[in-house]
Length: 431
Image (tube, rainbow, N blue to C red; front, side, top):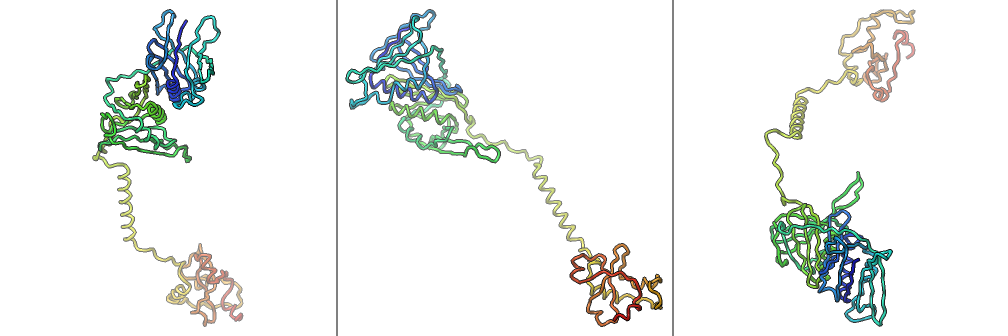
């Protein structure tokens, strides 16, 4: 059977409320560890990356304190666990009022009911208020084994101490959506607290926008500052805010001890009012503090430079070939009707051939050759009227080659292809 009874003053009960609020920001449950000389309240977050504990001295925090255990094999302590919300519903904010107004209490009495003949284990709290009113709360607790975080103080060479009220003003500048806090010492005699959140994207959608807020504090504002310059230590902004906020309620200096990133960091403060707060946090960060990038070897050119050099050589070759190559001659099919008529006049006139007025078709191959256009091409042969002004006064219109003219040029010149079917002498009478 375990006997645990203690009594709290109104001022101490209000401080217990602040302790429970701080522990509730780390975990949903609070573990108690009772010993003869102290009572310890601890919390461990779900990822086991942050541990918080508050030690209440038996002689300085309580009006009366009694602890006794008769369990066999006990190491002189009694441990159990309760929900934070259940405790906060009992230890409310206005337990202590310096002006003595209504709502304050005269005394708080707590006892543990741990008997074999009882069905449930009870945590019984009695609030004795003004005018003789007594409020009794019976909460259920669970017996568990409490674990504590280990910290090697001898290896923590980096340390600083500052008034918690100063830090309380600075944390107001941190963004509400920031997640991480980078603490490092610059070479200009300043300590920088930089809160930030990283940009997270999912394809083209941006889930989180980056946000950075940096607060620089002169090292002269610290009561003690001995940190390696350029050493970055990164912790959670939420944990740091909870620690600083509670430290300010006790008006104590906040102390920090740490060695290198990825090793634990310890915050601790208090003990002026018999309450000692200790926090052990896992860290990350840059151990080198800004290492120089690895130089790129210069023996072999990079692949991008090789591609750029090849492209420049090819462009120069292309421009050189283009400047030395003469422009292509205009094809014969692109010549205008006037140039074709001029070229036809420059050639020797064909031999006259006797025409047979009684013949309907042309049967003489030599006479057919006489009417073949210049640069005759059998595969692309088409004939059309020559409407040029140079032949306007002639008795008989001539034909020209329009075999390779485009459709647009043919339509612009109003040329219509006509197949020869008889001698010109036979169509003389039409004009």
